[in-house]
Length: 332
Image (tube, rainbow, N blue to C red; front, side, top):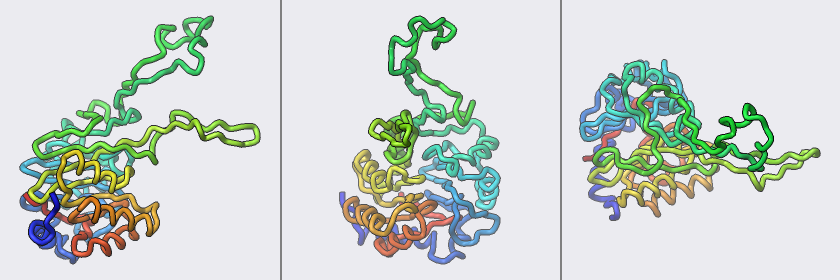
């Protein structure tokens, strides 16, 4: 289904513009208690001055959708998140569940405050073994017979096994965490989209370093960083909330579009364009606009000044500068 820019999206833009506004005063007015389905930016390093809110580099958004309240990410600093939540008039005890987009500190550190207020809150977390997800592991090494002749107290598990599953206590010990491996619909109209960054991750094997400093990188093995994005069904298409887009925002958009088999009306959140130049950013924006049919973009957090500038140029009136305290209406 192709998004109708004149009818459906035009109405959507009108609703969003009326609530978010282009001026800082409009955003500040709407920062407290939005009516209906909406997204509020609770943590970011840009935006209009909002009384009581503190700018910081990180991301968190409060989403109200069909009677469900969702916290998406929790920012860098628990104290700052607490101040911003209070200034926005948000009661974290009303949050039904939370989503952690990925394991970087500028998206999850604030959960310490969240869990102080709402200790039983369920958090959906990427299937990241370094933060508590179960991980099969093989400690056999390169020689399967190496343990022969060793005393049992020098053998893993007294020589009984070298293949096992790690089950660490994780970052949020005793919290109600569910690790998500695959795309899943967690409530009617609410999908978690799973992607994995091939650029960011953890090494399971390092380069060989010779005496002269030569390195052989042919055998390097990297586990890509897993990410979760949130896709919400609306009458205008999917509203996609992304955390930091290490998997590339156009790739996440395409993945969501293919999984739910619907057009994407809006993409809000961090686009992670700071490392990229103009040509690369234009390519991403063009793909989202022309190939993927995204109706509205609301870049935040790690998108960067150049990203803001180029996406505004390419999307025109379909660009929303949704910084700290801004509220975006979600169409029904």
